[in-house]
Amino acid sequence: MYSLSCYETLFYIYTDRGFTGDAGVYYNNQNGNRFCGRCCPRISDPDKISLETHWNRQTRLAGLARPLLAENTDLCGKGAIKAYGFNWLTLVDIPVQNRVVVERHFGITEQPFINIITPGSAAEKAGLRRGDILLAINGEPVPAAISRGSDSRKRIKAMLDDASSAGETVRIKYLRGEFKEREALIDPVTQCKYGIILVKDDSVNAFADGDNIYVTTGMYRFAETEAELQTVIAHELAHNSEGHVTKKLGNYLLGSIIDVAIAASTGIYTSGLFGNTTSMIFSQSFEREADYVGMYMLERADVDSSESANLWRRMAAENRTPGIFNFARTHPTTAERFTNLDATYQEIQEKRRSGQSLYPNRR
Image (tube, rainbow, N blue to C red; front, side, top):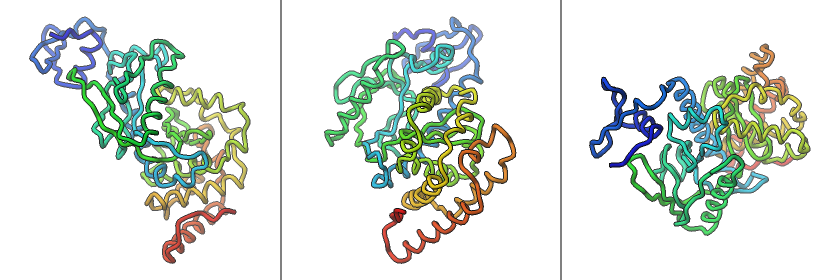
């Protein structure tokens, strides 16, 4: 009989066929063995729901970004990568004060735990799921993260990069809940070399730092449609692809943005840090260029951009709440901007009608 630890018991209660009995909480495994979870401290459903909600939103955001990243590789100034479409966490990636929650609720340990599977990605098509534990890549065991600052993540990423560079199907060995090792065959796909990160912050904002695209939960909720979210993503993607961050900034603020990225991946609130990055305002010429190139990126990914200008109009109309609508402060909303967006849409449609390639006119 497999002996479950206290935390493993809780993990399986919440992800499989658990039930409550008079003597405590039990789990029936596939062999009919019963395990009592009474030894464990009581756990908080709101904590679990909060983290799962964040992961679900991050998953949706990654799915919306995927076609934009995949269909615009020739526009990405930083080049392209072979993408698998999954993210993983280990216990040491989590701030100390939050580790009890993820360990009790999800069974996350020092081994890589897959928490995000991008919809439509190579990983999803290969059958990987949230909760799978990475064991090996092309037969080579993946390292566990044994301490804060461990290079485990860097080493796993290097292993994945090396495997994809060979141009062959990659074999991923993993462990699923029934304690059986499985293997997924993944063919990574080419896409722009930028990550998409959901930041748990109530300000309505989005940002690019040259390596990643950040969208706050405030912006996530403000966007009324998937096309509106993709409009925001495309705009920030254009800031990255056009090299605006490098042209605007030195290294001063990039360190704090990296800190935000670490917090965002764990679903922890950033205490307004994201909303305070107003010194990152781009010039009007950069904003016009990001609008223009972003519209092309949307159309190339088969996203209807006809209503893109309406997002900025709504943003301008709502820009009356200090500290909340920071996006409008860092991304000016003017009549000229709306006119330019509409003109870009007409330019793209004319190219479609005349059979021209959808490539932005460099200005």
